[in-house]
Length: 212
View (tube, rainbow, N blue to C red):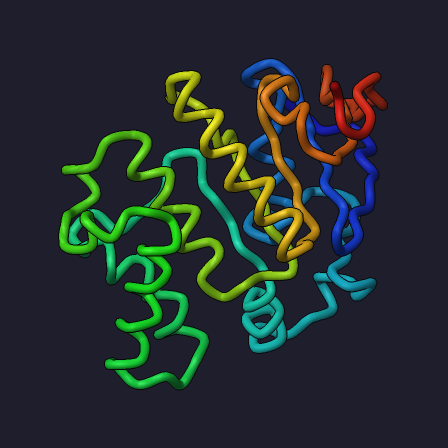
């Protein structure tokens, strides 16, 4: 799917939900916003700085401010979960091993998944893997949080619980929060706005603010 003249902005504390049918390019749009995929045309700005103007080291430094939840979790298949959670700390900080593992364990406890610390991703349920991936995305306390289909494959009860966690992140951490999904209905209790991606074009949608 070709994205056609897409333009939007997102500030700290704002939440934008981009909806659309499967195959419309939502994940690609998220990857472009995160700098994981380079567009053939157009520009991406982080903190009002042109992404293409940043050096490799500057991009690495900028990504410390960004958390990304992949649709298929992207946990490292041969690493125990606690090591997947700790990986951003090992890559982006100078914490020693003891402090890194301690902080990763506290993160697992915060998300109610301390019991899976030593498990491998293949031994997790969809819900456990999604929680672990979100815990990893939040370990650096990012200013920008991007979520790719965070509720896919989960039952309604699990979806409701995860939405409450995302809402808590929104209210207590106030990141710039970008979510792509098929429908915004599950996020109707959150203060957010919606845009619809249709035929490669980003359109304003009717959903605004908190729905009652």
